[in-house]
Amino acid sequence: MTDSLSDTFPLPALRETARRPEVVTALRRFFDETDRQIAGYHPTCWNHGHCCQFGTYGHRLYVTALEVVMYLAGGYDLPVIEQDACPHARDGRCQARTCRPLGCRVFYCDPAAREWQGPLTEERLAVLRDLHGQLGVPYFYADWMTVLRALQRD
Ligand code: SF4
Image (cartoon, rainbow, N blue to C red; front, side):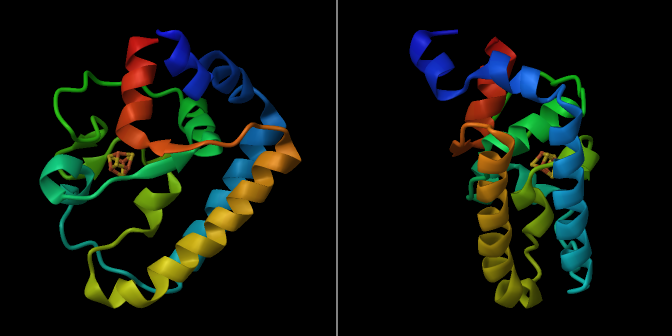
């Protein structure tokens, strides 16, 4: 790993943070509340994982430091990254579902979701930003694939 990459993503510190029970508990609470809010909108998944193929779908997923911590706390094996697509997307399913990032939960291509997903993302991101301060975790906001590639090289 280069110095500049380790400056951008302090991976040893993130792995250490993923072992702090109070951090994982706070994140579980955060994601449970997020899921509860999303379920209230009754969204429908239409594309079954195409949105995880970032290059072909034409959008990006950005994550905060604490979302990376939650992912690391899940203890997933990171599959080899072969293209601009999340390697946890398999056969239309997410293999890291329990610990997936906020954007994976909020995004639905269902046109009916457009009204609520922007405001909900902003609201939940604000809560998540505050959580970094409360838990003493330095904040960053970065492209998911860039983070996964850094983890793969680490
Ligand atoms: S973590 Fe899961 S939902 Fe999110 S991009 Fe990867 S496969 Fe898709």
